[in-house]
Length: 242
Image (cartoon, rainbow, N blue to C red; front, side, top):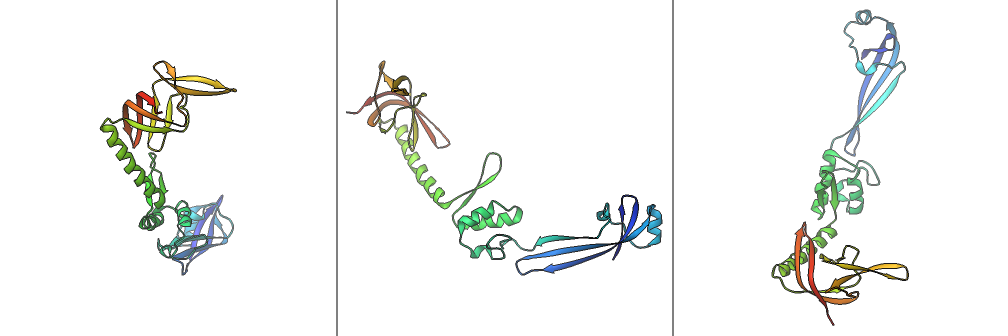
């Protein structure tokens, strides 16, 4: 069909054809070919009168040469659109690490579909505080469940106010903190020490620094705080088990 455009000074005449090509991988292409014919007039009204019934096409503005555009449109959400599995059904591919990578490079309804496939395989789709989504693997989900169960068990012991026995593998930091799998233990006071140019810290008990590295502690008195499954135990009194 004919169309009128505008290129700098002249209103121009074009032949515009549109074709659709369908593929067997769940997509089709809309191909638009715009072939320049000639300049018509400097005046829009004159140009429109010269070709009655021919519409003015905004997309032809600024063009003076023939051109072609291809728009890819996907007709489904369950087929890989690029990569080594392009054209294959997503449900038929069990390369989950690749599917994680693929998920991170797509968006919209297609990503929602891939999310559902990952979730059916034990993955979880979570969000940062910013709202950005991220993937959590089944292995991480299972380890998290085990960790949370042990944290809950530890919290029950804290609630009962029972003495705690802790094996210490290293000295506290300058804040008096030692971290293990389930809690951060914080001594009320630490003393700075030096050995061959290195600084280290020892907890203070009854005014004296105590060596605790690679030893067992009995924490007799303490307070604690739980926030987002993170436990902080503030040590008020302890002894080094002999």
